[in-house]
Image (cartoon, rainbow, N blue to C red; front, side, top):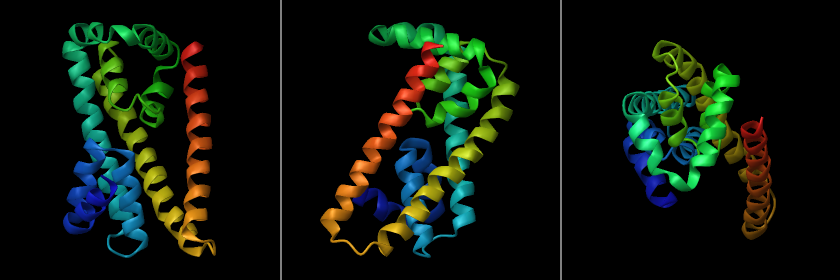
Length: 186
């Protein structure tokens, strides 16, 4: 999947970044950052198109939730407790959740639907989603850009490099997962 996405990004450039950020999210934005580091794409334009793709898809999902959330969310019976906790968090910290939900592993798609179903003001969501999307685009594309720099600078054998990267990814995953769990418990 990653090889195909990489080929797609280098072949279709910014359109691949835009649609990839809409559909695949972090992977497409990260790999576009790697492509920018390798001078295949422009770093500022990659950030712009990744953010734009994320903003567009989150607005679309928000309106799905706003219009049909009451019919869609009950279908996720296994996750009803999590959905209720997220809705509670939205009521307590609406602005923060709108901006940060895209960084929550496992909530990138369902998060905007839950926010929409919570009947958040659409204009407010739109404005905060732009801020969150811009922040997301900068962070994820920059991670790809600078990780590419760091990986190329490592003097290690490729297997050791991958082992280090996997360990770092697991640590980051655990950290962000715990943050989101603690956020939904509040």
